Length: 166
Image (cartoon, rainbow, N blue to C red; front, side, top):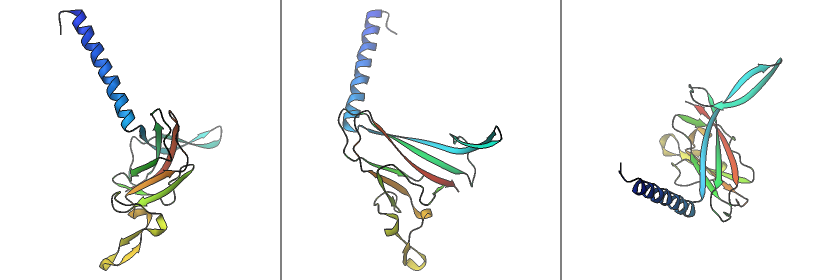
């Protein structure tokens, strides 16, 4: 630690300016920030009525259904035209068929680790003996949402999908 408080204060000020400038450059380079939120449904009886709410998926066991909500935020200063968001199916999870949704979004899937995407009905995988068969939800490795609407600066869009713990 410096014995001169003015030097210490100057170093802190310089570091703060550098961090702010770095954050601004990162936002300018990729203003689309995606935050993944994993939750499970929790059921409770309140006043004689069964209520379902989402709670953090801190602990899951095989057979649990996990709901992933992706918060897609434009941190930039300009509008993003119809952003594209891709997300892998987490390890030890299987995608639940027809669960990927997003308002104003076209959803496609990958069966090759995110190298290529296609609509569900067009996906093929190799079956026994190397013959091609129609892919099923359990074959999906990644999901992609093509938003149809632009995302204005400081705006947020949400997309969601469900998985089943293996």
